[in-house]
Image (cartoon, rainbow, N blue to C red; front, top):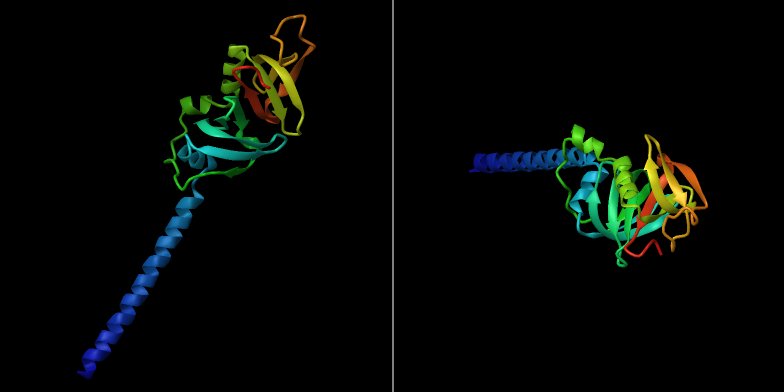
Length: 189
């Protein structure tokens, strides 16, 4: 009887140590997996949700997360204005759910859908936009063209279409300095 108690006690200790080791291994694996998750994957997991970003130069930017690119996100606010946000300017993100999208292989096509491509789409639309730079400077006008590392903005008042008589000048802006580009159905108001 005494031997049975001794073996039962030893078996209990062994089971407890094995369970503790499994928990430690699971926690270590979970930390390693979380360490490999990129912010874009967390953001893709929140697509369709309302998030709030705090951006260098632009401050708070909030809205429904409509799309996520390799280096940008697209939000739509309650006034139906869209904000194209450069991920390089994002400092904090609020409103993320526990969901994370499965990391995707960044293939050749996906890499091509970067901030420059998104800006080129805005240039094609010829809509009046507000460009907020990472130092807080705000420019208003129409994107005329997008180069390899810059964009050209025809500066004009937000309430006027891009016409020669309304354009005050054309400014080249380094894409790396762009924090947020806002546009809306009735201008940038």
